[in-house]
Every structure is written in structure tokens, then in C-alpha cells.
Length: 622
Image 1 (cartoon, rainbow, N blue to C red):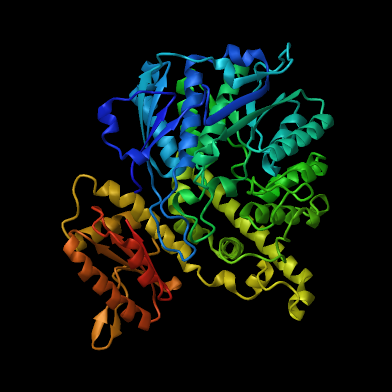
Image 2: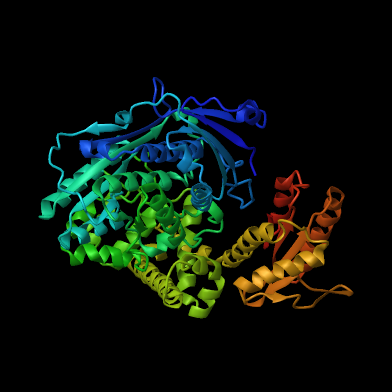
């Protein structure tokens, strides 16, 4: 874990005993109001009815969420995202001192527990909050910019819709308007170019339907000097909190995200896309926790939901055609690069969102509404930079093709953990699990069919060698997408042990390595039935050798090492070196999981580098 960091918010003066616990360089000051704010949140074009319903508790929620988001972007994760696959210190320890208005409410154990739980799930970070009573309050009106809206016709709207300006949120807005319901859209404005696109899309949407519509843009930014982290996993908490505040002013029943189920579940596409790197913005657990927290804040039942959980992106795009709104596709933006400033091309063509968008549109056979010229680099035939861009293309294809080829049993077993936790709040869990499995099988088929058609379309160019050698199609035809399917399963094993061992060993550490293996075997067996314990035996020189676990169809072995004392490190690394030789000679891929609960291993990067320079060898620390 990275060093603990303390955030002092709204001019708070904390207890000196708290300050003594932190290195001076890890103390950061944040302020959302005042003469020199470095965190800015503004609701634009709103009626004074919003101010009327902005209670002390809701103002607290807005400030807490804003400070969490700012702290997220201000705190880098470890040493970065390594292209060689090595691990880094991903988890962060973020602590806040925040003066608030409704201190009795926010200090309730249930409230603090839900707040830290949803943030931990979104980001895989550790959070703590020390709340104090506001002594000098500031005007709530500073957060609001009023438009000339005397009559507000939206009281009692069923759901406030979070509107990103992408295909999924557009489809949701279109379905709502087609059904005759009032449409209240809340959109996040991070850069002026994005706001212009969303505003233009909204005007076209409003012109197509008789339903009453309003869009509330929210400007969210922070001082450039505190922006150091790209992942921003808590941005969705701020976004949803703003939705809840608007929902309360409308007396709405809840907040609605429209996001296809593939993105909501977000099974790891790339080998490196594990833990918090895989966004959980609309994951069922996130929405359940937000529903519970906001219900406490508002002192009434409020639902945060996603009606598209069981739909693929291709199926979502088809909704636009069915509702005679396919013409609006050209006004949407799906690109992950919010800094992208081209006035004529809205999509880079190389990020995962651009791949997903183009595949869905081609699968739905709506490419006439999404011209290739809108992409700076063609998704399938354009050049890709070494590293992330090429890895994302090949891993996206590999993941989808694996889903397509897997049996339902294999898919359910490999992703058992993800499916099990996603369906926890469903009444009919069996039916929900079946629908999620069917969804991913459908997605796999859609992607497989699109790739096959693209290869056929570009067959001559591929044969003649005129397709860029770094393009997605060329990489796939060259087999780059099937070089490491075993890593998907290896990462499942690692994540299970990362989540299970700290909990299982919280009060009593294993007495030795065999004891640790027994605990780990229970964790793995409960979540996966494809691993075999201590099998098979294999001869090397004059001795027999066997792994701790094996997955024979993937040709994968799993070895668990336990660092109880610092003096054991040399013996453990020597044992791993011997295993690399023996297992490598037997053509076995191996993932080494090193359980180091007291952080005895200081130079982890060197160990990772030396192990992973051997083909088929991977290592992770727990």
C-alpha cells in the first residue's frame, strides 16, 4: 500500500494528534469554496427549486463527494501501469478531515460504514473520515447558477437520468421519451468541448420528441496541480451523488444509469485490467450500496439502478434504430479521451471504448450512422502504438472470442466470483446468473462475427500486406490475440487470494506454508472447480515434482510461497528459481503467489522482473 495521505478540507483545523500520524508531504489541503478553491463543482441552468431542496445534509454529501474525487485524482497509484506486466502498489490509504453541518448523521456507524464500503469497492482503496462541526458556514448558492426557469414541471419524475452523451445513455433517454415520460438529464461537464457535444445532442433529442425534457449540466474540475492519477475510480460516486441531489429536488424515486451489462460487469478484458483498473461505475454492487447510502441521506427510499444490465452494447444500439433515433448516433461520443479536442473527429479509434462502440454499431448494422471518418485511426485497420493500444486491441478480441468458445459451465466457473457477487441482491439469483452468462456468450458471438466480417472485407489488403502491421486486424490474423489466454485464469486465482487471504488470516496467521495452502485451497475450491490440488507428478532429472495446484487444459501451474520472516526471502527466491527451471523444462506456465502479510520483501520489483523475464512465468504478491 502507498503511504497514508491526509486531506484537510474546507479550512479545517484538525487535532494535532491526527497531524502527527502523517508525513508532512502527505498532507494536502482541499477547498471547494472560499477565495481560492482548488475543487470546483457548479450546477448550471437550474431552477431555484434546487436551492430550496439543498439541505445541510445534501450540501455535506456534495462536499464529501467532491473532496473524495479531488483526493482520488491527487494521489498517484504506486509507480504507474507497467507495460511488462509487473505489479505495483495499487491500493492507497486516503484519510479525510472534513467540517460538516449535520455531524450527528455523518458520524452514525451505519452511514460511515456504507460510505467507506462503496468507495472501497469502486477504487480498492482504504478510506477513513474524521468529521467535525462546521463553525463558519458558506453559502450553498455558490454551487448553483440559476437560469430563468420560473415554472418547474418536473416534480415527481420517476428517475433522474445520468447522461454522458454516449450511446447507452442516449438509448435510455430515447426509450424514456418514447414511453411518454418526463426526461431529466444530469450531465457531467469536464471540458468545454464535451459540453458542446452534449448540448448539441440534447437539442436534437428534444426536437424529436414531445416529452418534456431538461438537461442539468454540472461543471466538475480541480486545480491542475493536484491532478496526478488517471484512473479516477471515485468520479462516479461524485456523479451519482449529484444525481441524488437533483432527484431529491424533483422528488424523484431514484437515479438511473443506462449502461450495457458487459461494461457494468466489466470482466477483465486485458491481463492488466484487474482489481480497480477495471471500472465498477455501474456494477450491481455499486448501485446497491449507493441506493442504501442515498436512502439514509434522504431519509426515504431511493433507488439507483441500471435497466440495461442484461443487454449487450449491440442490443442497446439497436434500441436507437427501433425508436427511429439512429440519426442521433452521429452526435454521440464514446471516446475515453476527454482531452481529445478535434473539431471534426470525435473518436481516437484506439481506446477500448472506441473499439466497443465500433463493434456494436457494425454488429447492429448501423455503420451508415457512424462514418469511419469520425475516427482518427480506423479501429480495425489503423496503426496502434506499442503498449496499451496494441494490448487493448488483442486482449479485447481474445476475451470476446474466449467467451464465444467457452461452454456455459466453463464461463460460470472461471468468473464465478464476479457473477456471484453481482447477483447478491437479486431475488432469483439462479435466473440472474443465467442471464449474465447468456449476455456474455451473446457478446462473444457478436464480436466474433464482426471480426470475421472485417477480415473478409479486408482479405485482399491483408493478403497483399497493405494493412498496417500494428493494426487490430493484422495482430489478430498474426495470432497475437491468443498468445496468453492462460493469464485471464491466472488473474482470477490471484484476485481470489488477494481478497480471501487477508480476511481469512486477519486474526491468526498461518503457522506454516502447508497451513497456508489449506486455507488457500478452501478459498479457491469455494470459487472455482477447475483447479486440481497437488497434481500432476512430473519427473525432472532424478526427482519427482508437483505443483500446489494445476489447470491442465491451460497448461498452468500455481505455486504458493509464504514469507513469515525476513530471513526466509533468500530461500524462497532460490526455491522459485528451481521451480522455474523444473517447470519450464516441462513446458508448464506457472504463476507464483507470494503471501507476504508483513511486507518483509522490500524490493518486489526486482523479484517480479527477474521471474517474469522467463516466458510463461508470472508472479503476484499478496
